[in-house]
Amino acid sequence: MMKLLTDKQLQALHSLAVRVGEGILATYHKDFDVFIKNDASPVTQADLDASEQLENDLPHIAPYPVLSEENTPAKPDWTTWETYWLIDPIDGTRHFINKTGDFCICIALIHRHRAVFGLLYQPTTQTAWLAQSGDTAVNKFVNGKAVSVTDSRPTQLTATLSSCLGTKTQQLMQSLPDYTWYRRGSALKYVDIIEGKATLYPKMWDTCEWDSAAGQCLLECCGGKVLRFDNGEALTYGMTDNLVNPHFIAYRYLGDEAIQQLLSAYRQIYPAASQIGCS
Image 1 (cartoon, rainbow, N blue to C red):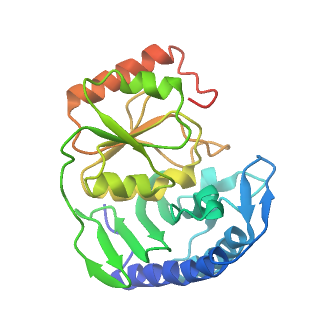
Image 2: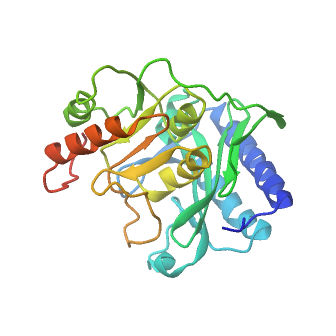
């Protein structure tokens, strides 16, 4: 497909992420209040300020509506949008609160239910990863300077997992003969797969579409995949009113046999594709 964003727009998006990241860090390095949203998840003023800045500035770069985790319309009209921005101003708010550094800004462009542009920016390292559909590699910038993306295969089958690690995820991974794993916060798990630190990221717990879109685009641009566990198809966006992803697996350099083993194991764990609880 034709690329939707010009080089000038890509540069503007990178610059915007850096500016938003500077504001986030200004809060990160001091004491701040934490509030609890209606869904029981935490939020800070940094989340809200970053969301406001992105919502204001993104349409000036490319004139599409913006759907943000921190400002979701009451009326779910995004299902009718052909093209729109999908953002998570701070993905990994708990890590932001705990000052681990394991959080990032997620910016995606959705076109006809597919993620066609993705940008992840980690403020604490001033590192950005971005790409759009049609690219064959991910662009990486550290302190504003382009650097090469490490493109190596893990020496061992390695899973990067969320902090919510339950018995069903362990049961799924046991379908593979030999593997290791580690915990990683936020959408930076996708970066770990892209850079060869991990092979796969299975997600058997509810996530929202803004959590996965940017990372999925980046991973697909370098040959990886993000597939639904229930039907083996790629994740899509803006198809439902609730914005909740089905369970999925993100991976690169994972053979077809291993994928089929994981999909088969998932169907044994969830015979009716039920997705309830922290697993």
